[in-house]
Amino acid sequence: MRSLVMSDVETGSEWAHLLGRAMAGPLKGKKLTPLVTDMMTWQSWKQKHPQTTAMQLSRTSKNFNRSFYNRDPERFVAGFSLRDHDFAIAMTDLQQVKVHQFEAAGVPLLATYTSGATGIQLFEPNLKRRQLTFKAVDNGQMKDAETNSIWSRLSGECLSGELKGNRLRPRVVIMSFKTAWNNFHPESTQIRINRT
Image (cartoon, rainbow, N blue to C red; front, side, top):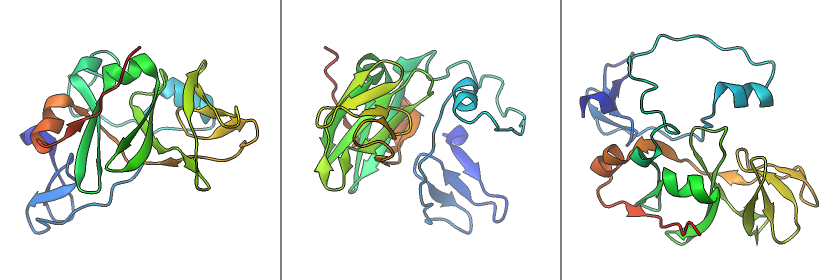
């Protein structure tokens, strides 16, 4: 479990990154506020943000790329917590169907996968108190059944149609080794996806 711990520079407290909680040190018991982030390939990012520059950091592990999500997807899940419950979605399931709507802890959710991304996105499929129903279409996009508007699976932004310019609210999701997620969240519920 040692590799799943990080420490902060200011206090030297040790944090479990899958829990976002300090496990030892002066800040023991404190919890970080999670942020929504995008994980994607550099090529996909540059396509969307061509003026981006990047700082090159040394790698902390020689094996960093060996089990990268898309190269070994059966070892990974997208995990999230909602209303004091933990959930996981198998990466291999979502790679097959691309868009999956479901309910977790009574909350309607939408999980999406895009080949240019290195993870899974999670959104609320509601817009101005109206629940939308989505299906995958080509080019990393999806379409809602209610207005036939076209949306980005990666950003949750409506690209064309009646709802153009609107954006679905993202939810925090953590890409993790399946075994690590289950170790930290042993009561986690697996979201089942029908691949047909």
